[in-house]
Length: 151
Image (cartoon, rainbow, N blue to C red):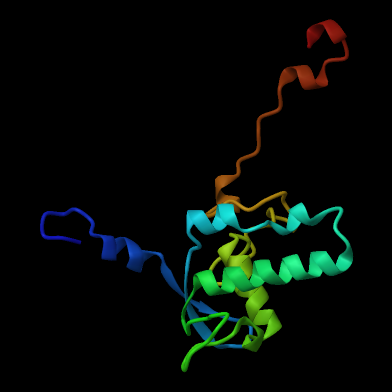
């Protein structure tokens, strides 16, 4: 933060980085994917109607792109230099966890953000959603009415 209280670009960039403990126990420093990346990459759900080989290739490219985009340390690259990794060198469970984190399905501590309390899967994940935010809705008197005119 600058001396006048206004955030700097570096403040913003640093706040977007997280140390993510992977299923293997390794820790990667990752950042949230940028908007350009989110709009440019084909989402796996858009693969319907493609032959299986094309689906597999599109999904692999999606995973590769996501890993290259979000991994800060160690750096991931499709053409790695010394000290960098190719996406194929990352264990599958770790790669899947990183992609799930980047997509908002799990939090950095591994909590599944795609499930409702009680274990039912939701249609999508909302960051910071939790059971404490959910309150039961009061029953409306019309719900018990037997007279259709009462509704």
